[in-house]
Length: 89
Image 1: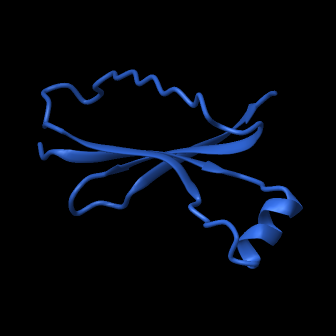
Image 2 (image 1 turned 180 degrees about the vertical axis):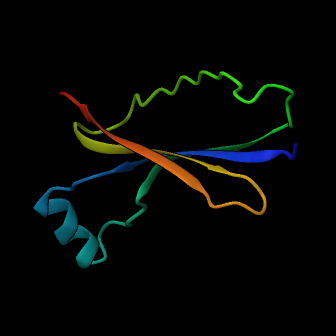
C-alpha cells in the first residue's frame, strides 16, 4: 500500500451580479476557493479507513457552495465526489 492525498475544497457556486460587476471593474478580487485543506494519509492495512472532518464557515455569505473531496493515489486516476450545500441567512 502507498500513501495517498486527500483534498477538500469549498467554493462559492454562484455570485450576485453586483459582486461580478465589482470583480469586472477591478474593485474586488476573485478567489473561487473559500476553503481548501489537503493532507496525506499513510498506507493502512484496511481497505477502507473511516475518517470524519468538521469545517466551520463563520464568515461565509449566504448562498450556494460546492463541497468537493478528491483522493489521489500515485499511479491511479483521481477520485472525486462533490455536493452542493446552501448557507442560509
